[in-house]
Image (tube, rainbow over all chains, first blue to last red):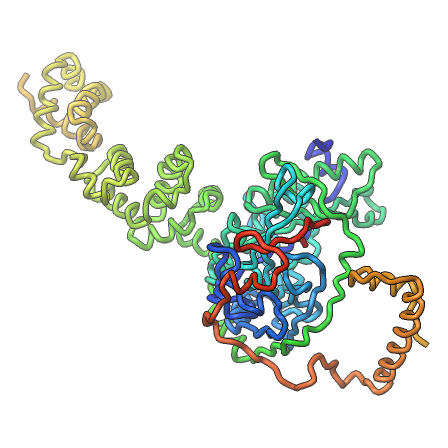
Length: 505
Length: 99
């Protein structure tokens, strides 16, 4: 267990400096350089062609759709699109690719110099500078056999499945990120989340982190603070944390590394430049491979592939088709829905913005849609340990809201109806019918119950007649109980006051 | 004369996983130097308005439609493999880390 410094203390002494590399698997039908299906899973080594195995005589050909997706992503990241972009060989010896090199892009990436606007949970807006986005191929999947943990250390041999080899990737590399300060962990999470929103909005990736469609390597170093007036200290040595495959892990891993590095530096130690592996179970990182000569990848232009020279027409066509940027979309929705900052942040943090959009589109008011999703539905999801979106559909929520709006249901009854909908009993209307949950709006039935309650509590009746209307509460309670809660309390109150004077002495 | 050193040759051999004897390092240092000198004559005629060539034929934008084609069966894929386990390639334990 590494020694950790208190987070606040670490921030007093050091400035965190960040950088991210996010890999996106594109959801094309075929691979980057071969016409094998872009499908990872199933029987190992069946979704491959000679190109994916690097067999002699096979030649790669670029997937045009992957290039269009990469350009769209570059544009959505505010990048310039390179007039000419080339592929390069990244040479390394590791059996996750059969060729002993990965086809990537080196000094001529398809997109460069952009920025992404990210909103932090505390409402702060942060602009993350993007250095580049380049195209490359994914590697195969290794399973280490033997040894205690199934990890590399101690393994006797490894098994290789090349189904994932050649899947199209775009790697997004940020510039050095300064100024995140104490928000660094939240920024990391918000950045990756925004990238996910962008690629989902573009429809170019499934972007499921748990499936490895979207992977984040987080670079972090600490720079010692200097007294005012003195020149800034040089940048610290960075570590690169891999294997962070959930938004929560990204945030936790950054926080952990800040605390770990701060403790080492404060003890007079030095940070080793290395990759570190995030362990979700223990919430720690462990040392991986140190940076060494092996990182000399001897890039050179890929002689089997030709330059990519996108026409201005193509770029403008893709630019015109871009969806609204996530941050701009949030600003617009917040204004349209007339939510307070706090209300909108709660909604954003719950990850249910799209559900509310769809519920509003299905006819509900924004306030009601937000109330149900972030309230009762989120609570139920939390209690059941499932995703709120799996419980009910936006249409069902809109139907429920409509039943409340037209007076068929009170909020209390609506919660019971929701419970029925979640239990799979049908649409809200079907649950209302089957469970007999509608508000009793028949004044005759209400009056009968009110008269009975008033007559059984003559002291209350007398008080109401004396003008002490607050005494009516006891009668209203009795009536609501008699109606099993299926009455509108405001209407009951009206009728109680009316009947108190109407009843014979 | 080029500035290829024995250290560079050793480094390159290491990167390329090629075992060299001390004699080979000496001879390759001299040979690589000659090759570099030879190639360097190109630099004498290169001007900033001549872009670097990465392909001998002036073609660009050769793309494939995103349509699934014929794949190998696992048996075909493994036919040339020294070793396998089920339908996966089997390789010796790997030192170092995933890239």
